[in-house]
Image (cartoon, rainbow, N blue to C red; front, top):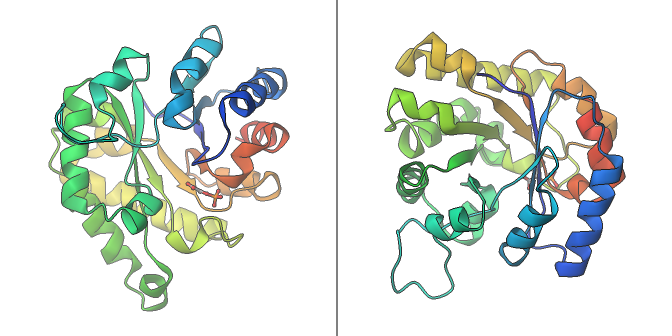
Length: 250
Ligand code: PEP
């Protein structure tokens, strides 16, 4: 069922104490009367305490990444089973920073998606074009290929566990936002691409989030677009008042 979702990606910010402080502020400040499903993604070291902290709230905890293998000699990595064992059932995969700085390819992401689904995890699957792709008019092709190569191998039934996050790379952390019209145009394209391969029920049910410099002052306009089902928020998720205002804009 299509859901409104606002997710905060905390990236490599907030130590243990700061995480606890921000969670307390969010519990105090997030609006209680919104329909949106609220997600926060702290760093690995703070996931277990965040799950515990948020146990009696409506805020879900997500991981920012996970390894594609079930287990093994992969020093420094975290598996799906480890996440599940501390109560984390949702993982962000394919964030543009993972693609750019850690060389995550579409085929690696396809593997990660499979491992997550096999372990009964839900996935926020991120994708989006770079500035050069948009300038050359290639953005629809790029987005379609990222979806086909990273995600379209899954079974129709598995889509119930997928949340999409369209994040144009040129808008992430840059202060540059896609206009509401640009976001809607791409979200509609994404939904139609899914419809062609998986049918209308999957296309209508999947939540497609927008990410890229969403702030309290532009959230309402972006979220009001018919095919935008919420947002994946970076910088503005680190301040409780800003994140609360964005959630209230849904
Ligand atoms: C993100 O990192 O997913 C993101 C959208 O960041 P920002 O909101 O800071 O652009």
